[in-house]
Image 1 (tube, rainbow, N blue to C red):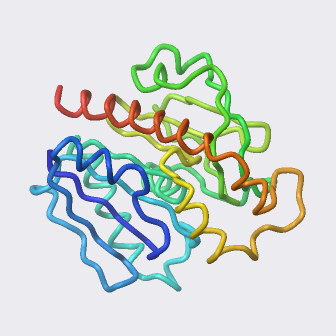
Image 2 (image 1 turned 90 degrees about the vertical axis):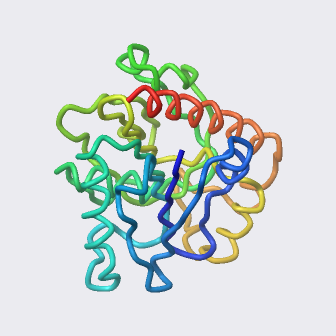
Length: 234
């Protein structure tokens, strides 16, 4: 497949997704928005992946390229392309589908469990997730569920952690792609966000157990395999 991804800052890339794409032999292109990037022609894209970033979906005045990015995401969904959004990417999907994106009641940074919803058990992408799984978070915003979507996961700090629209559009507020190196890069660039709070861990706690990264990366691969199967079936 032809996979295109949107990257918003140099230090927040594909993580473990990159290895999966290479292993599967997909053709991969990218738009790096901070470097005066340009959106692709959707005729050349089978699957759009929208990564995270420290900006918000409403920050067009600081990042005017958000307007073009939202238009492209909306077009990809309307055209029936596979679309995966992670963190900011999930919020952008929610926004273009008409849902509200706003500050969450608590910042959620570090390792906290998400719970699969009852509705998730009836969807191929929802069934990928265990009933409860400790995953990596780094966000302060959240979203309402778009009309017609299926709510897949929730956490104690944030009710809407994931949703799916149809068979091929998946939005994840949490991170399954994060490797230890990705987490170290986030800590170097965004350490000032580690303010005291019930759902904010220290840098030492975030890096303490390397096996956690391997586990979420395995779950990311299972998720990508499932999205790919749904995309091919279209």
